[in-house]
Length: 296
Image 1 (cartoon, rainbow, N blue to C red):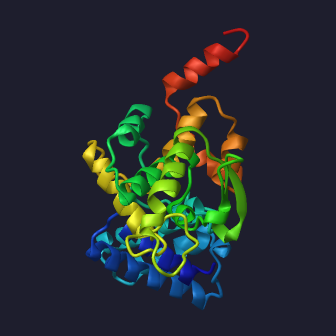
Image 2: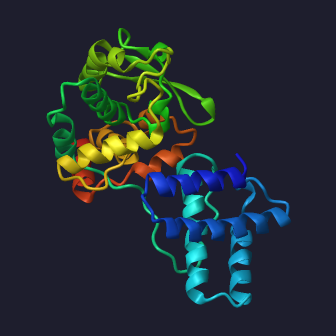
């Protein structure tokens, strides 16, 4: 994916998943349009071709052009967020802005919900309707399988193998991986497929697992709305799909799962990307150390 296309993906992410205001998106859009054009003038169109030196030169040029300090800071923040997004979303394998010596708002991964909060979210009463069954299955699969919203939307009936306890998931770059689906997630998905999906299906057959009220494939925006809606009911304001994916990874690691196994489940090409999810607190690390080290 080139930088122009990645820019569009990032702005969509800010609008849909981060809920940024139109003004913020417009400002970041202008900053990144200027940045991408500046790089293109120097023959750089691929994310992995960008270096720290190039980013520093661009920001320095903004300062020298007479742009207000606050505007330069915002532009630098936009560039840092853009590159962090490309790394996290596996559009790029590098992070040239990691050591950018400029003030900017700290970039962080989405918040994690606790195991107790996850239980409140998933154990709340759902309407006994086709959409209620669907929404419950959406939440269970997101948290139980660690899928991206786009991957959940891309599931087709033929990729669901409940008898074998697996999903065939197509992630970034159409790379296929096999993800286990067991327990509560499998139960919720089976109930939806047996009792809810047929009522949502329209006259024209759609292969998608998750359907909207018109019988078409559920959109990423709709998944975000579903997650936010049911999160709000149990006091989890601003909840979004990637928080559930992030929590899936964190809870597995806290439970003792191997980092390489979590990498495979998340579909990360590089284990360094998976390490972005390892933010275990010191109490947990100490507990694991005491339990595992022979001289502890």
